[in-house]
Length: 62
Image (cartoon, rainbow, N blue to C red; front, top):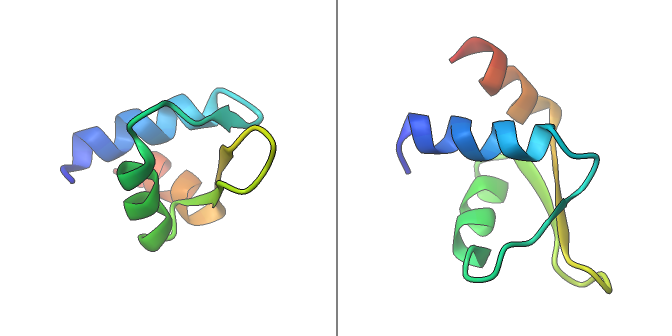
């Protein structure tokens, strides 16, 4: 995943308290979670993601 793509996704997640999962993006969310940028909550009634401190730091410094 390229830096700009990561920044765009993280910025979108940051704007929401809890970002709802977009259909077909599960692999992307899995990758961002492996990188430590988000916490992915797929088992909730309404799957969601939240940005982590590492994700916030990445947004601010890249």
